[in-house]
Amino acid sequence: MKIGFIGLGIMGRPMARNLLKAGHEVVCYDVNKANVDDLVKSGATAAVSSADVARQVPLVITMLPNSPHVKSAVLGEKGVLEGAKEGLIIVDMSSIAPLASQEIEKACAAKGVRMLDAPVSGGEPKAIDGTLAIMVGGDKDLFEEVKDVLLKMGSSAVHCGPIGAGNTTKLANQVIVALNIAAVSEAFTLVRMAGVDPTLVFDAIKGGLAGSTVLNAKAPMMIESNFAPGFKIDLHIKDLDNVLDTGHGVGSPLPLTSLVREMMSTLRADGFGQDDHSALARYYAKLSGTKIGK
Ligand code: NAD
Image (cartoon, rainbow, N blue to C red; front, side, top):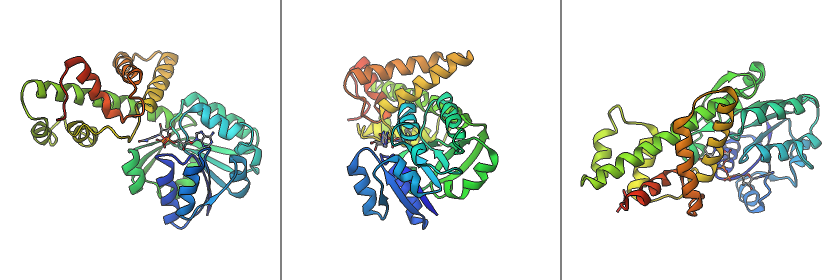
C-alpha cells in the first residue's frame, strides 16, 4: 500500500521506516527538509507539502508535536484536506488534546475524509523496534481496516472508543509516566543522600512492586546523568497541559499532575526543555544540591 507520512521527527522517522521495511511505499513530508532527506535515504519519496502527500495516497499518517501543528497540517493552507480525495483515511498518531481530535475529525468528515486518533506510547526505542503501544479512537470498522498497518509500527493496537478516546487514553498514560519519573527522582535522590548506591538500589527493587517500565528506562539514565532525549520535557509539559485542560473540563482532580507540571516548568525556565523527561532528576539536584548520578 502507498502510505503518506507527515511529521518525521524522533518518532515519525523510525515509524515510517518500519512501514518501508514491511513493504509499503511511503510518501513523506516535514517542514524540516533535513528530516525528509533522511527518510528518502531509507527509500521513501519526498512530497512538497501535506496536500501533495494527500494527493498521492489513500492513507495519511501524521506524527506531529501538538494540536496546532495537526490542525495546520490537516486543515491549513497546503494541508491534507486541500489535496484529499473523498474516502481518504487520516490516522493522527500525534499526542494532542482529545477535543482537538474531535474538531479535526468533524472538519474531515465534512469533506468525506475519515479520521482516527491513534497516539502511541513507548518512545524512540519502541518506535525503532516497531513495538509501540497504540491507543485508538474513532469508528471501529475503520480501526479494523487500518489495524494491520498500525501493527507494523506497534506490538499492540487497542480500540478505546469514539474519536478522541485514543488521546484521552494517552493523557492517562502521560500522567502515570510523569508521576512515576518524579517518584523515581525523589527516591533515588533520597538514597544517594543517605549514602546508598543508586545502582544497587535499582538492582534490588526492579523485580519488586516498585518495578516498572519507567523505572527500567529512566533510572539508568539518572544514574549516568544522561538526559539526551528520548521524550523531551517540552513535549511532556504539552501533554500535562492537555491533561489539565481536559481534567478541568470534566471536573477531574489533578493535584499530583499540577505539581509535576510546575516542576517541569522550573526545568524549562532553567534551559532544560529539550532534555529527556528523566531530567526531572535535575529538579531534585537543584533542591538538594546532590546529584543521583556521579
Ligand atoms: P519531534 O519534535 O521530534 O518531531 C515532530 C516533527 O514534526 C518535526 O520533524 C517537525 O519539523 C515536524 N512538523 C511540525 N509541524 C509540522 C507541520 N505543520 N507540517 C509538517 N511537519 C511538521 O517530536 P516527536 O518526539 O517525534 O513526537 C511526535 C509526537 O509523538 C508528539 O505528539 C509526542 O508527544 C508524541 N510522542 C513522542 C514520544 C517520544 O518519546 N519522543 C513518545 C510517544 C509519543
